[in-house]
Image 1 (tube, rainbow, N blue to C red):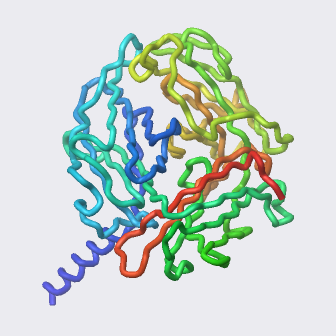
Image 2: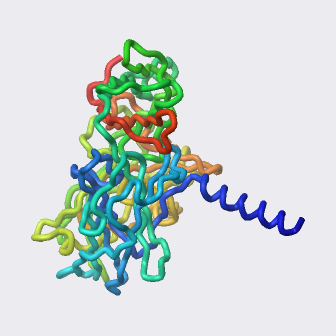
Image 3: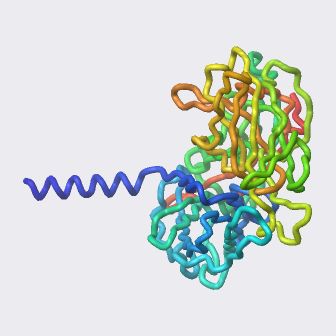
Length: 416
C-alpha cells in the first residue's frame, strides 16, 4: 500500500507539472533592456510568419561577461506545454550558448550586450506554428528570464474592425473588436469547438482576451460580433520622454544631474482620468533605444536613472501606483512601484533605463492584485490602440494548436 501511495503521489506531481500553465520569468535586476522582435521594429511579443527570423537582445550590467544559454519550448493555446517532442517542432538543436555579445563603449554604466538570432547555425528553423517561449539560463543552468512569441501560417484571412461599445454605460470608455475569418483553401472541421481566438491590445498579453468562439457562419466565413466578450477598455494615449542626448534635457525631461550615473528628472505628470481626451501620438507603450552621438546605440547608449513623479489627489492618495509600459514587458513589481512623498504630495519612482524613446503610463493595483490601467489615465473610446487577432485551430486527431492566421487593426478609424 505504501509503494502504491508513492506511485500515485509521483504521477500526480508529474501530471500537475505537465498541465500547469507556464508564465514568463521576470529577469533579475542586472538584466536590462530585453529587446525581442520579429520582422518589424516592435519590441516584445513577436508574432511572425512561419519561416521568418526572430531576434532577442539584452544587456547584462554585472560586468562579468557571463555565458548565457537558451532553450525553446512549444505550448498549447492556454500556455500549457504541448505534447510535441523537440524534434517535431525544431530543426536543429537548442540549449546553446548565445555567442554574439559586445561590451559597452564610452559609457558610465558598464554592460555587455547580447544578441541572438533564430534561425542560426544550431537552431535552423521552427517547423510548426503555435505558441512558443524562449528561456535564457546562466552557466549554472539557473533560469534568468523567458519571453513568449507566436508563429502563424497564412491559412486564413482575418478581418479586424474596431467599433464603439454597444453597452450604453461604457460607450464612451470601451472599444469593441469585430472579427471575420475566411479560410484559404482549407476546410475547418467543427469550428465552434476547434477554432479559438486570441485578441491582444498593444502587444500586452496580460490584458488579452482568449478562447473566443464564432457566433455564426456565412458560407465558410466565421463571424465574431460580440459586445462584452470582445471589448477592451480604451485607456488613454501613453505619456513619453526621450533622452537620446544624455547631456541635455530632452522631450519630457525637466532637468538632468550627473552623479555616479546621469539622472533625468521628468516633468511631474497629473491624473488624466477626469480631464477631456486629447490626441497625442504614441507608440502604444513601446520603446526604442537611440543615442544622438552613437554609431552603435546597442553598446554606446548609456544607462540613466529616470525619475518619475505624479501629482496626487484624494482619489489615488491611498492607492498602490506603478509605472507601466513595454520597457519591462508590462511587469508590475517593486521596481515600478511609486512611493508617496508626504512633503511634496507626489508619487515618486526611479528606474534605471537605457537611453532612448519610451512610452509609459501610471496604473493602480487594488488589494487583490487587480490591475486598473485607466484608474489614473482614464478610459476613452477615441484612444488609438493596436489590436492583433490570432486564430488557433486544432483539427480532429491533431496533437497541438496551430495558428492559422493573424489579423491586425487600429482604433484610429473607430466607428459606431
